[in-house]
Length: 142
Image (cartoon, rainbow, N blue to C red; front, top):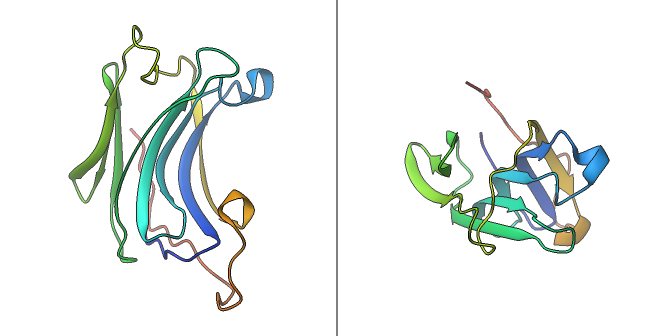
C-alpha cells in the first residue's frame, strides 16, 4: 500500500463489526489497520465499548514516507499486533478485567479500504490537487 499523506485526506484500511447496523458504533468494535490523517504518520487503532457511552481506544503509529509498504495485522486470542514491512510498531493485549484496555470484539468484522476527503480531519487546502489515489497492490487475508 502506498499512502500519500496530505492535509484533508484520510486514507484507511479498517474493519467494522458485522453487528454495526444493530448495535451501532462503538459497540460493534472497530480495528484500524492503517490510517493517515494528513500529518505524515500512519496509525493503527482498536476501538471497543463495554457500555454505550464509553469508548476504549488504543492507538500507535509510525512515520509515513509515502512509498510502498506492506502493512500487517495479527489478531489472536491474546490481542492485536501491527507491523509495517515486518517491523512491529503498535499492538494491544486484550484485558477483559481492565476497563481501560480494549476488549476483543466478540463478533465477525468486515474490511473497508477507503480514501475519505474532509470530515472531522478538516477540508483539504486549495493546493491539494485532485484526483488523489489510494494505491493498493494487494490484500491478503488468512
